[in-house]
Image 1 (cartoon, rainbow, N blue to C red):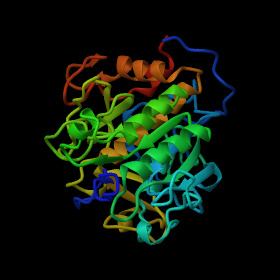
Image 2: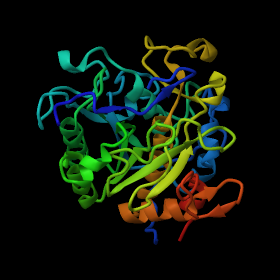
Image 3: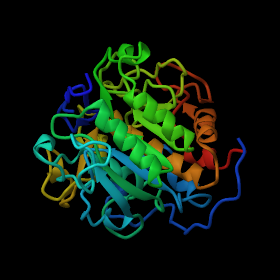
Length: 361
């Protein structure tokens, strides 16, 4: 089962096309403007939905590292390059890896490079307030580029290697915008597939927060690995804070679920999430951006790095991985009823609220 590469897929719906608590003293931090100077900030409704700018006066994620366990990152992207502090490729090459995490790294099994991981990385921690591109939710956090997926998906074994490598190489938060097909949860529950579950437990044992996408199967529950114990499952919202039509519901045994901005997918490009992509990898919405190296995608893949970014704001305050999850759920807000920390299958414990989270006691 481990060798079936199509089991694990990207959890993204590309723009208009279905494709894929206590806190310690804060570390020293730079200051960022509540309205950063990045060229496409006005198109970035996602960070504003999670109240990220209001949190930056308290925490910017300084000293923290987010591992993007995905399709790799464009290591030369001008809005990401100086944020990347390491990387590794794991596609049919064992636990030691065989590349540097670049989006085009890997052998024949990797296929052509895929821009998905680069887009995810930008939402989490793009260079911020530099007058170009986009802003990251955790503007001072660093990135690890961990390539575990190729053009046709990946294996549980490779993903587990990527998780363990991330935990051993400085990750404070692991972002997994990937997931298995509906029904694979049963294989984890019955112990037939344990690679990723065991790796998540290992990461948690090293005090690493693990955040994973719920999936884009419309009426399903959190997919594996978001379903697994120790992972925080993320469902997706649109610009109006409604549940995104494609998003799975936030249901898993431990109910560790929150929501984040993922885009609408079937409306205009600007209803989706703008972020970084390799300059030559533009898609349907590239012309709407007008700047090479940026595009709009939608999916629970896009919601997850918003949550991972907020998690990095909290780990920068010295909070443990369990405290981070508890705070994110306790301060999450449920639209409509305007409650906090209330569970619903649609939003889990609510849309993450960075401002409320970093000031929570």
